[in-house]
Image (cartoon, rainbow, N blue to C red; front, top):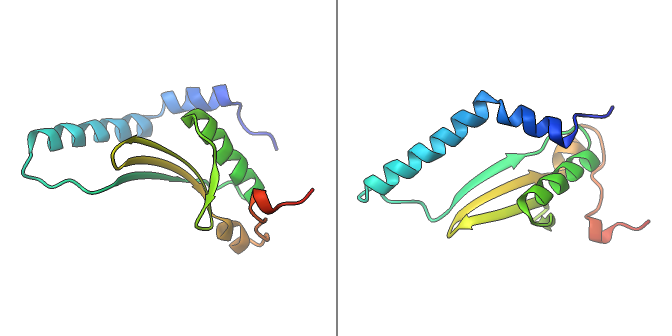
Amino acid sequence: MIGPTSTERREAARDSGQRIGYITGLRGEEVFLATHCEVPIPNICKCEYLVFRGDFAAEMAEVDRIAAELGTCARWDKGRYVACREFGPGVVYEAVAIPVMSFVAGEPAPAPKEEMVS
């Protein structure tokens, strides 16, 4: 089954009330922290998007697609396939695929790309 094109995904995301609400919440937090200096800030602020696609190869492909949008490359990190971008000291966005999720669904998790053999 072929899913929506990247253009269709972007258009759906732009029209998503959930996306608008999320971004509005981030901006609200920014304003609050900027105007309430007595409130401590965390050492790291990580937004983590977990990819669920049914099979791990599709999950890895989605992380690769997101990595391209972020202007980075996906990599293996502590057993997870991750695309990561920092937006400032301690401010991180990650897209993550975890092999065990596919394994639990009944599919064996593939080896990391650098270990795969054609």
